[in-house]
Image 1: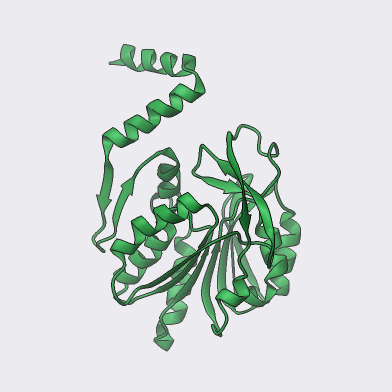
Image 2: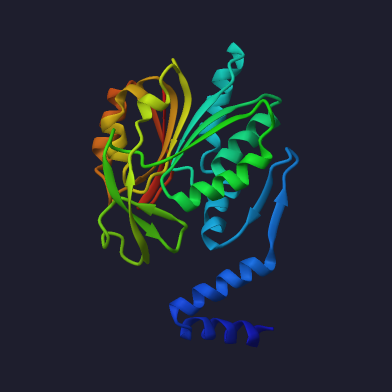
Length: 265
C-alpha cells in the first residue's frame, strides 16, 4: 500500500497542471460526495472548489460564532433573523444559515449576492429545492462593492470564485475568463429593512470598497463577519471604518493572509 501511495504522489507531481485538474474533476464526479444533515440539509460536492468552501463553512465552522451571535440576539424579540450573504458562491453559507435555523426550531431570511453567473445558477439549483416555505431566500446576481457601474471580474479556476482585483496580484492562482459585470446597489436591495442581524462578506478583496460605500448598511447590522484579504485591501482601514459604523467588539476567528474577522455591537 505504501508503494502505491508513493507512486501516486510521484505521478501527481509529474502530471501537467491542466491534466491534474481534469483528473480531479473526474474523481469528484465519480465519488458523488453527499451528506444529509439531521436538519434535512442535503450537501453534495461537485468539484474541488466546492470541497474547499464546504470545509470552511460546515467542517471548520468559520462562521458559526457569528451565526450564534445573530440568532441568539434575535430570539428574545421573536424576530426572524435576516442574514445578508455577500459573496454567496454556490450556496453553502446560505444552507448553513438554514441549518442553524432548523436546529433552533425557527426560520430565517437570507438576501444573497453572487457576482459570477455560473455560481449564481449553481446556488439556485442547490438552495431552491431545499428551502422550506417559511424560509425566505432571495438571490441577486451582481457585484458587491461600488454603488453602480461595472468592473472586470476575473474568474478563479481553482477555487470556484473570482475577484475584481487586477490579475496577477494573486500569485499561484490560475485566472480563467475575465467578464464585465455590473454592481448592484446593496442599499436599494435592503431598503425597508430597519435592522440586519448578520452580514457575511467574502468578496475576494473588495471588502474595503463595500465597507466604504455602504456605511448605511453596516450601521444597521448587529453582527458582521468578513474574510479580509491582507494582500488586496487595507485591513487597518477596514477595521477603522467598521468601528465608525458602531461596531464596538471585534475578534479574529482565523489567522492568515486571508483571515476571518468578526465584529458586533
